Amino acid sequence: MEVCAEILSTCEEIRRTRFPQGLPTAEAVVTTAGALAARFVVHTVGPIKGMHGSEDAILLASCYKNSLAFAVRLGCKSVAFPSISTGVYGYPKEQAAAVSSAAIVCMSVMRAAGGMTPTPSCPRTRR
Image 1 (cartoon, one colour):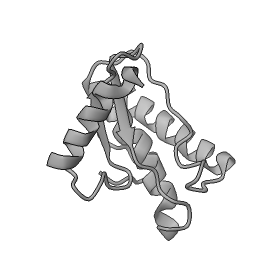
Image 2 (tube, rainbow, N blue to C red; image 1 turned 90 degrees about the vertical axis):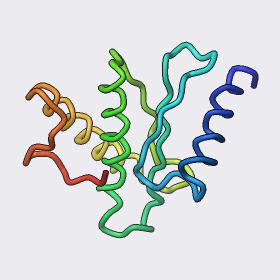
Image 3 (cartoon, helix red, strand yellow; image 1 turned 90 degrees about the horizontal axis):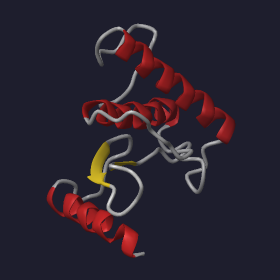
């Protein structure tokens, strides 16, 4: 995994200096992409389904919105996402797709309106 050594080293440094208890759910951090065919990697922690009750969807949307906010600040022209929280964290894929789609549309609308300020049509998120 030579390709990932630089990313791992940076993540370990972030954990050591900024998040000794681990990255909180819905927060995001950015690293270089090491030897990957990308400029950056944005890391986020999705919610474990059912652990946060009615906040699950808000936290999941925040993962996408916080990650996209980094992409905008970094001037990224394209972004690729995995299906956050749908593996071992148990979020049903259909529900996660609806939440992620709404969050991405919301961020697109905010950008088109000239900024990153939430609008009334956007779901509430955590920052």
